[in-house]
Length: 192
Image (cartoon, rainbow, N blue to C red):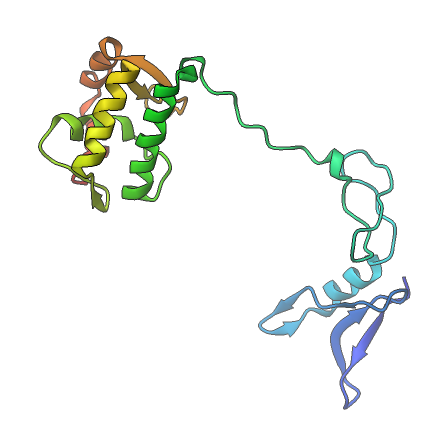
């Protein structure tokens, strides 16, 4: 749209382009601290040109900066998390899940480290409280024990390499914990 390139005081091209309609400067691309002229030119040429929504194909309106939007707000798909497993309806179960997740975050900087449920169960019933880059405090272990008792079970994320947080009773959890194969158990050791 009649874009033009800016020049330096000595008359050499700067590689920076401006829109011919609104005169907005476009310096969107640089490589090795030097403007990439052709990309800046393309950006300046598209500045005041009406755009069609990437989703519905209808023309979009201008935004607060006067540029045409790439999509209508209503057309952009919204992230919808998967509904929780039906077994997570009990508030004590949700609190247990949140506590287990918080410990994983504190010790591994991961919301739910692979094998978290196994490692936390092992820490709760074993001698080592080392986990990740930290230790699980006695207070946290006591909170896990109490929440597990109030919920009547434990949180399990499903078979190896899956992730569907769900509540299982203690009667169902104990065989799951004992059946962990040796290679997976090595992956999730507390002192790894």
